[in-house]
Image 1 (tube, helix red, strand yellow):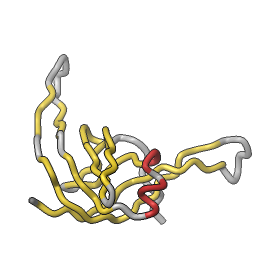
Image 2 (spheres, helix red, strand yellow; image 1 turned 135 degrees about the vertical axis):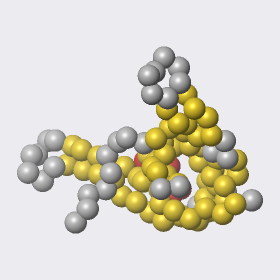
Image 3 (cartoon, helix red, strand yellow; image 1 turned 180 degrees about the horizontal axis):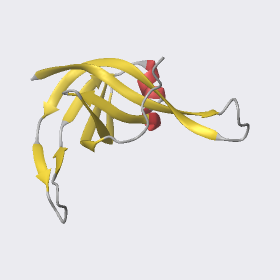
Length: 112
């Protein structure tokens, strides 16, 4: 079984300091380790000029307090130099199994 070491992006909702009443998602990344359970790549070319690459991998990460308390905030996982959407979460304590799909195109953490 292949090993995994990478980041998971979590979204938290915060109020804009300059515009009260406006809430936005702020992404924070946490490093996790685990195992790659399943690797499966496919090309989705349905009704598109350019085909999309999709993966149907399952990655099992070691759960910590933060990940268990923020399952609903998980947005993406950084795997093979790409951020991938988390499409499913299964808690099998002491691990969290993440199903991943297409490329993530949402907000990313702010760089300073």
